[in-house]
Length: 260
Image 1 (cartoon, rainbow, N blue to C red):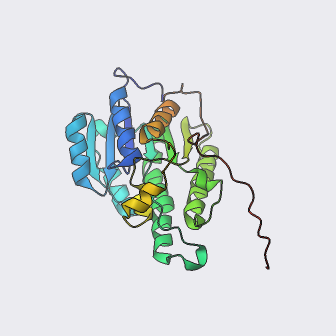
Image 2 (tube, one colour):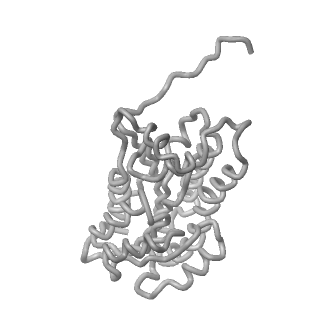
């Protein structure tokens, strides 16, 4: 895929488009001249976004990425003008809980594995054959610095994002010589989304405290990174982008000096 413009209206498929990164990504792609298929479980939000962006440029479709059959059916029945997807943005994902592993809720672990790993794999597998057949396309996966840098309570969430990173690299190997590109975007702390509210079960005060006294990344920062990656010339593949707010960096190794 070459640079997106009104004269080159690429078709972009975005999961988790009803809020946060997904909404910002959809807005920026439409502004760039692309047509966007926005999917999420909350169709009412997608419909409002379609009213804002224009029905000719934004197609709202209900999809729970955890449902393999639903993903396959949706891709098979895309309208003709949206059927040749140039770029898949695997954005849908979540973190649940911050308890240590021995106290964590297994239901939370299952939900993260189902959405962050299985859901990403299902949408990728549904759209990839068309890209390979057309010898063009781009998979952009939303990972996280949590997949590289561990922190207390990050257990399964961090592991799912490590999966996203490695799956992206392995896709690149599989897709060598097909013309299909693969990139992974790995953000650090980002405000202005539902991420922390979801993680803390809807506790807005607890979620807000995560970003107190610092300036986090914004959804538009992430969307700009995604847009830049996809706008590179067709012979350029950006493998990985890792970005953090200036306020965030790396901690020293933890050393416990008490009794074992």
